[in-house]
Amino acid sequence: MLDIADVAAAEWTGALTRFLHEQLQKIIEHHKGSGAQVGFLTAGPASVVDVDTATRQWNYGVLLVQHMYDEGLIERHEFLSWLIELLEKVRAADDTVLKLILGQALRVSHALLLCHICSIIFIYWPSMFLPCVGSGVL
Image (spheres, rainbow, N blue to C red):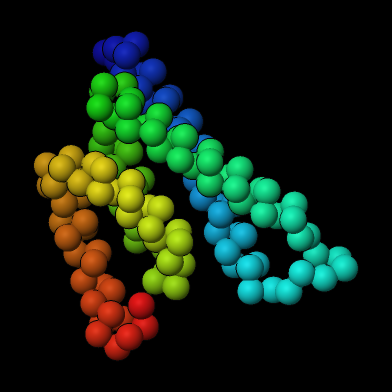
């Protein structure tokens, strides 16, 4: 039988991961478009404001998740799985996005290492970038 606290934790986890994912998508879209020139029909200062807002909301969401994670108010395994999935999807070229995700991953690295499956993926993941580092791509 499901406990009401478990249901609430699942709902909070889903809501917070969706919120963080939305903010991350805004940041990614800005950085993908940052190579384009600002012209007559493209957004200039408004996009800077949007990315600043998205970054502030990302930082706030990360602090909220960290607090709720420490208090046991979210499903830890589901959140850790989502975080690992983000690390797997990010490209080496998305340096700013990689820093945001790695910052969060390092905050909960102790928990990642306690979760057997997550720890295997967390340890395997950096090895995918070692050839890039050696060749000077990063």
